[in-house]
Image 1 (spheres, one colour):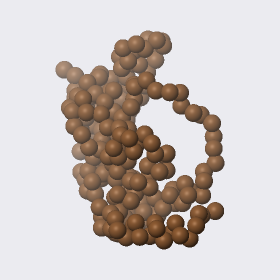
Image 2 (tube, rainbow over the protein chains, first blue to last red; image 1 turned 90 degrees about the vertical axis):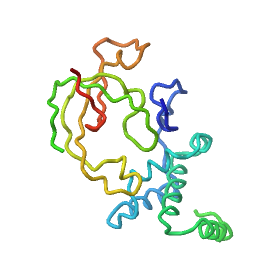
Image 3 (spheres, each protein chain N blue to C red; image 1 turned 30 degrees about the horizontal axis):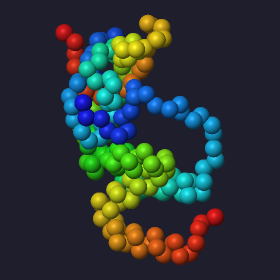
Image 4 (cartoon, chains in turn cyan, brown; image 1 turned 30 degrees about the vertical axis):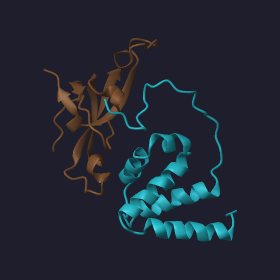
Length: 103
Length: 95
């Protein structure tokens, strides 16, 4: 049976960490970004977000944190929809890196 | 599509092996459970995930499974259950 990287029900794993933690500003921003993209604008749907996360290769999937998976998927879907190109995204990321870290 | 399965009806989850986005985990495929309730009609996530409109809407059911039917090594009570919400196109009627 073909199993997606996300489809791990029943596979032995380490214990789930159950401690609460605050969300970093970048995580809150990614959450807000998805709300905007899936809200009135309907630029993308949450089902597309899930599909993008599930199509990460297994190493990326296991390595990335929860919101890192989200932004990887959001970027992929928006590039698919031709809202921007990979080159434009890279250019913008380089610009932001020069500006320095966000608070 | 109108809801056709009544609570208490025995159903088996399709064991079809497909890739792509779906909301039916592999651990429940081929397993038999009982309709607990109809949850309503919703756009199909399997086409919404690829930019489609998700129409026609699919009927979603809450299906109850015995834990010891799902897991060969289940050590809890034999009456323990788990409910999963599964779309009608994944369910097969038991004859």
